[in-house]
Picture 1: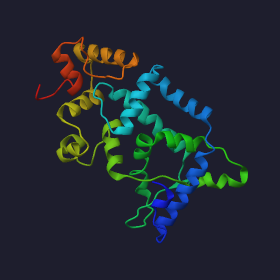
Picture 2: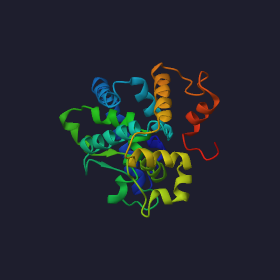
Picture 3: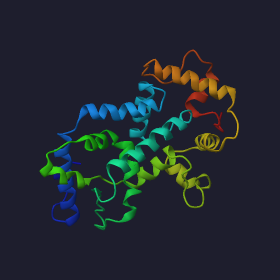
Picture 4: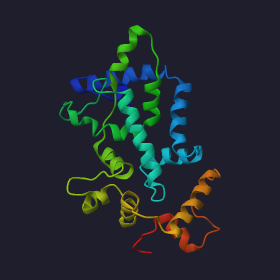
Length: 243
C-alpha cells in the first residue's frame, strides 16, 4: 500500500502513513552490494544453488508448499527469522491494527512471518539502508504491515515443528485453510520426525527435481522423460490418497 491509501483522520492511519513514507525514503538508500551478500548467505544454505534459492524465494512469496524441499524451505525461513530479529530488534519497528489501533506484543507473531516470506526483498532493502546520522532515528521507526492469515500460513508451511495448540496435524480445518492436504502433512511428518532414511524412490525423485531446477528450466512439471506415475507423484507428493 502507498501512503495515500491510509486514512489520515485516524491515529492508526497517520502512523501507517508516516511509516510508509519513512520506508519509501529508506528504500532510496538501500545498499545493493549489501543485499547481494544477504542473498549469498541464504544461497550457501542450499549448497550454492542460486536456482533453488530463486525457486524457494518465489514459493514463499506465493505461499507455495513444496513437499520435496521442506528442509530447504525451513532452513531459509529459519535464517530469515534470525535475520529479522538481528536487524529489527524490539522497539525498532511497529505495525498497526486498523480495527483496534492496538499495538500489542503479539504483533510480531502476525507480522514477521508475513514479512519474511511475502516481502523479504523489501526487508533486506530496509536492513541495508544507510542514512546520515541526523536521520538515523528513521531506522528505529520501521513500519511493517501485518497479515494474520498469511503469517499463520507461513508458519504452518515453512517453520519446523510449528503446531497450533492441540496439534496442527489434528486440526483439519486449519490445514485446509492454508492449503495443506493429506500428502503434504504426511511429507511434513516424515521430514520432521523421521528416524531413518526416506524411500529410495522419493530420494531419486527429489534428485531429478533438483536437477530440473538447476538446469534453469521454467517448466517445473511435467517431466516428460519420467513415467506417468512419477510425474503424478512429483506434482501431488508421495502420499496422495487419490493416487
